[in-house]
Length: 224
Length: 224
DNA sequence: TAATATAATCTGATATACCAAACATCATAT
DNA sequence: ATATGATGTTTGGTATATCAGATTATATTA
Image (cartoon, rainbow over all chains, first blue to last red; front, side):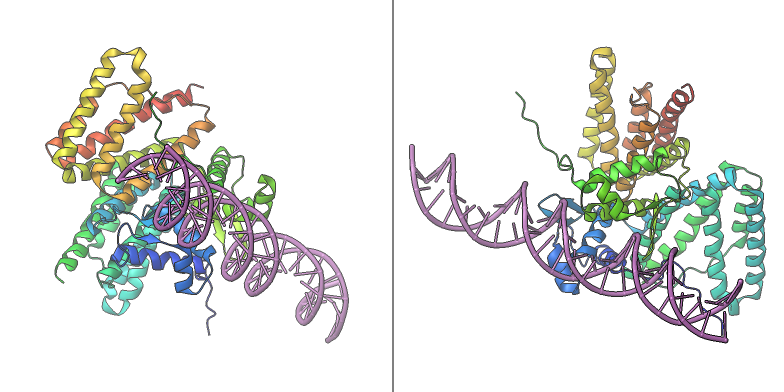
């Protein structure tokens, strides 16, 4: 049998479990804005110590989901009203910027890899149906490659954070099915703009691409 | 005398001191990419316990400046090459998006406050010289009001984080002097776009405004 | 000698204990 | 009756101890 490679990040620490759990609860509205999150209480409820709770709360504070007042307590932010739409706008902005930088900074090797990725995806899209799962995965890889090409850890990290929100929101909407992307010509067009090192065009096309796929998600959410 | 109001955040915890200190060190290159940041060592060097160190490292990890591999350690990110220019592009994107949302969501009262702020700034800009300090402050307030008008804590928080980077980078460049803004007509134009609820225009004007002021900063940096 | 098993050690992950600020309560003095 | 001050409780901030995975050094064996 093939040995499964354990990627870093698969090992979930208590901190990460707490983080995800609290983020979901806040976004879902289970934890109300203004609510007092007591470290000891949370630790007691979850049956763990306060240390992982602390770390998770600090990260949530940095994300803006909670506010910690020294010596007083940590409270759910009163402005947690970010709609799915706004989140997707934010994602589009960041991914667009990422594409711009990729167009400016990608090496020839990376460019070649991206070309091969496009070809792979086009091949899979012809095969249809049976390979849908892999296609979704390869689509994600395409975006990951562009983020990597931007060579900017801060922007990449911000995108990852937005993705985490996005997922939490989709959980709330009971909308697990990841959008199977249509219009693969868009991917090719993004690639071509990057390949021509046309930063402006690359950003614009990526932004539009994300927003268009976003519209599908929003449509599905409203049809519930 | 006027009583100084103590704002939350003025009380700096050890965690915040460590956070700022490490961020500066990483951005300045004092801590090299790939370098192993040992919690015990750092705690020893700073003469404190590991708890505040942990919390700071988790936040830096969330920012993308360090990477923590479970059970192995925390290392300075190998991709900390974010130029000032890229950071300012990021800021421009986020502030632009913020202006877009503000145009869509600001209440009439907030709009009125913004109008008064513009008038105040125009008055100060006529007074010149003697009131320069206050003008810089009021300029910042103008941007804060727009961020608040966007009513999106996540985007606002992201902008604040970028600002923290921006400041750390300027420290490195020994470029403390905050840009005294020229072209106040730009502020008025942004206000007008928001007032007309023209989201597209508001975003575009804000983005251009930030990028234009950015060019001044970049010019100063290169002239050193 | 080289490959492998084993023990010592390093390090982050987690748990627990204590400290000090903030707040609420109640007593006391004016 | 109100303002002031003492006191106890709550809570985050910090320190320290323990646990367990990962690494390295060392010993053992083919």
